[in-house]
Length: 89
Image (spheres, rainbow, N blue to C red):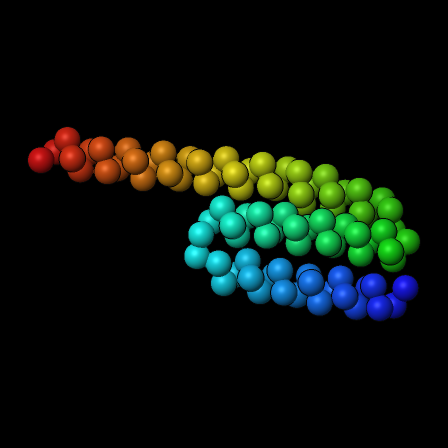
């Protein structure tokens, strides 16, 4: 069981670093969700199913949806600002 935990921890570190290094927000949110899934699997392997369920629900589910909504809202705000600049000319 130890090699599986080590591999998952390595993937977790790689995912965390790549979330910070990504320039595109959508790719960063997707990698963040996968990081949460990996963490949830690690909690299951560590015999903490209650924490794993919470991590899966909150980390992957709720936070993922919130991040997608925020990205959508940011683009709407950017489009509105661009429209105001073009209307003011």
